[in-house]
Length: 226
Length: 226
Image (cartoon, rainbow over the protein chains, first blue to last red):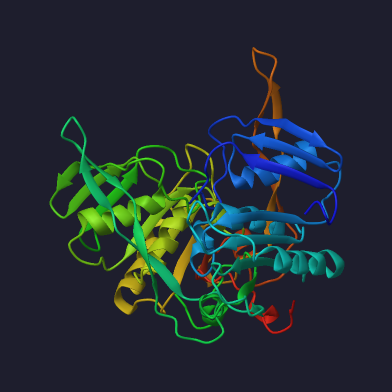
């Protein structure tokens, strides 16, 4: 991003996996400048990713940013993952506010994941959005396939696949003989359509889903009545 | 709900305002039976509303429930509020899992809010969903207008209004002279269309928005390229 312009980072001081669009209203928020260089400032907050966007707007920026980027998330935010994702929530919060926004994620959860194939595509997508903007009310959910021996084939603009996580709790007993659970799950994709993000990633393309914050199931507004 | 069938409640042990679709993966979860009567059991969890749905499915229920209901939330979940809402996140989690689900909210934040006008409409909507089901992948976001002297005019099936919260942080200084912030905000609705939830509520109707978990901005899938 520093190759493309002035960068202001607002990072969270805790892991935020599965934090979704949560905002902090029960406890006070803090934000501190932790690093400053030419064309670059980094702040850190005790809040969530969505708090970070709101705090940046209120307490850090003196004008609307040209672009909000979030990520690169370490793990897929394709298909239903978007709804659980803190990375994509930050993007959607900027989108609500009318700011062009892109979320980047790599479909590789391993700590030593190889990001080397990401750079060229990330720069191409970002530069195009800075230059041309995005349609009103639309942000991008960009996912990169896991690095493989084969070169990435290109970029596909696609729809969100209909997939889900099936929960898979691990039950344990604490020293006081009380049960507790660790949440886990396995991913189930029954969507066999050709034009989904999961299919593009499976075929070794970068997936780009234009997203918005309208939950309305429009095709049913006129058919339901009570 | 007890007039309509066997009820199993899974409540959260903390306020969950603004918790959205967050799931708990950094800490262990607990769930305990706290009350049991004929046709009724209540459990409580330390997790989020979405955790509650997942835990109910895994640890409490021996079959898929006929219906998941969430609320009555004390405050509006119309328009953009859905994205921040723990109440509606529980509904959407059930929806992902293929279970008919309805979220109920009253557009009144006051602790002594009057719920007396809600009952008849809530029963009518719920009974109809139990009898007829809902379209595949669709759940309902139901909001009741604040009680007024005028009787509620009826039920309207509408779309989510394009509105947003503009953040409005209150800055304070702690005893150690460090700044901190309380998040606030004010609601801005610039959507003047006739067929939105905000318009229906403003006109003293119950608003019903059929919702789904597809974030894709479909009208832009074919027009964007990178």
